[in-house]
Amino acid sequence: MSGTPEGPGAAPGTMRPPVTERHPKGPERPVGLPPERHAVGRTTAEPRDYRAAFEAAHLAMAVVDRDGTVTAVNTALAELLGSEPAALCGQAAADLVDLAADARTWHIYQEVLGGSRSRFRCTRRLKHPDGHSLWAEVTVSPVRDSTGALLSITDISDRRELQARLRHLQMHDPVTRLPNRTLFFERLAGAMEASTYGRGGTGRIGICYLDLDGFKAVNDTLGHRIGDRLLSAVAARLTHCADQCGYARSGGHLVARLGGDEFAVLVEDSTGTEQLADLAQSVLAVLQQPFDLAGQRLSVSASIGVVERAVAGTTATGLMQDADTTLYWAKADGKARWTLFDPERNAHRMTRQALSSTLRPAVERGEFGLEYQPLVDMADGVVEGVEALVRWNHPQFGTLAPNRFIGIAEEDGSIVQLGRWVLRTACRQARRWQIEHPGVPPIFVSVNVAVRQVWDSDLVADVAEILAETGLAPHLLQLELTESAVMGSAGRPLQALQALSDMGVRIAIDDFGTGYSNLAYLSRLPVSVLKLDGSFVRGFQYDEGGTHPNPADETIVEAMVQLAHRLGLKVTAECVETSHQAGRLRRIGCDTGQGWLYSRAVHPELIGTMLGDRPGFVCG
Image (cartoon, rainbow, N blue to C red; front, top):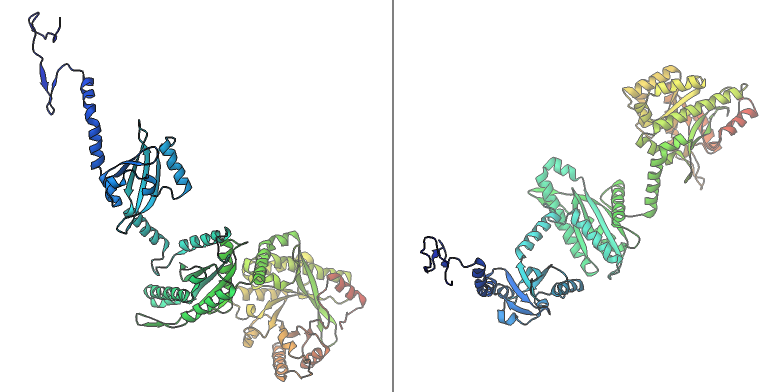
């Protein structure tokens, strides 16, 4: 039996017409037709649908065959490139969007066309026929079940412009509009890399690193608004100065604000130190001209550190460290100047840093020793005592005098530990001489004390403990403090000096006459000895032409000696080198002398030998 199947309720054997149903939103469809047959029936319309979607799409697209030739172009792409679709068909896609610009991009593009890579994306700057440029993101993807690929282009010019603005804000100082620290170091690293790879140029680089002298005072007195205006004006002058010097002809330059009142001028492909010195001098001159800011007339100066060298063998970090060090030198030398990097001076600084880092462990390792210089009674030449002078037997730098490391020890606080060792060693040695030479009147030992030892330790307790430990009588110990440390002492320092004096220890003022010279204050200090600074004694010496010394020196020394004696103090003259000096000092009334005329600082064994030669050992 053929025909349409019977429906429910139909009389057997009766043919009924096909029943149709209406889809609410679609055409009538015969009921009973397989859906797949209906779908298959629509495939003939799909290519036309895809073609219409391709043409109407806002995304610029093109179909590319396996050889890279454009076979179809939509309207959006033609408008983007300023051409007609027909004119673009048949052209090489790589030429339209510059995919052959570099070997790597071209290789990846060929892999996508060949089907061995799933997708490729790159950014290109395209030229429009009307003259303007645009940034485009190009994507190439293979089309499934096809031998070609789909090329799409997105105009990202607005995004790139926004990124450029954000980067400019990130890389520039908002006050001066100059490149900031980040951009400066990025440019410096790029310059170093360019020279390293030998891309032409001189292979040298230079930096002028500067900051304004006294800028904080401007902010504090006139306010940050005027301070910011001053920074902007300085930035403008620096930029103009660098441009006027014409460094763009020999290389590149960059003026940047590194932070606060610090600026830097980077000179790429510099021609030598003379070029950087000329630039630094020009910067100093232009900044010394007054600034007129909102009714305020300001005058400022700058300190500049100058570094110029070959790129080979250096790093960006090392270059900036040396520039920073040289800027510090310019400020330390008096400000308002430029200073050129000095390798020898830097070596001394590095040595100082090396000493600073090893000073504390050196005390524990026993690298220090003491030498002793006699203190002689100028009336009869008998040795009354010795001054203990510390030496550092450094394993790398050899024997170092106190002026090489005492200042470092005072800065980092290790002077407390070192001073305690010196005091104990000197007292122990003085007691040993006393025991080994019982027939000779005992000599006292004089030890230098830094003012930080008084503040950072219990000096009184240390002295009492060491005297008890060594058995040395308090009157055989003399402590020397500099005039600047003693004069004006109050509170704890004065109390410590008084307690030491009450204990029987002698207190001496070292280098007297070069500090405060507050003579009236002497009467209130527990001081027993004044040590005249060597500059007064050297003034007593005849010069090579036989010219007599200035009589004013003798008058000043005589007045100080008489005043000291009126106050019950003894006077010691340092740096006595000739018998003529000794004779004049003796006539003036100095009590004791110390210097090369009598003896240099020697090892303790030699002092012991001297003491053993004859009772009441006499120098000279």
